[in-house]
Image (cartoon, rainbow, N blue to C red; front, side):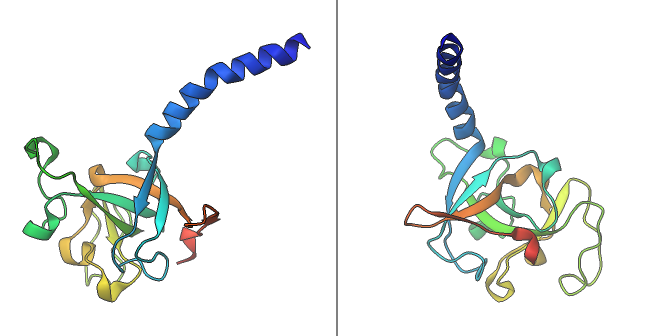
Length: 166
């Protein structure tokens, strides 16, 4: 009985720490637009996990930090140190990684080229409606924010999406 009590107290004391760590590593993202259709639709909610860029693999769906992309045409937008207090928060784009640093960019996406070091080449699943690396070039890995794990349906059930199927 004493072992059960000690185990329960230990778990209860670790629960707040685990919750804080989970909160810092996970993100809920709302899809806006059709660039990832049919995988994700406008209004879908996604669960994403913040991971180091070195763990991102080809085929993964990632959230990319964007700032000022719509105004400047630059995917990176302003550098983090150029952000002025009161600026709107950076937006995120959801795209699929199709080539990693050192890999050739797939033929139909780009006529020639190799992804430079510390960059990835990303595209949307709906190629006709996607603003991605085909327009802006490879994305620096420093802008990768999280890897999408799954879609969370509005009725609170979860369905895991196999991102490597494409």
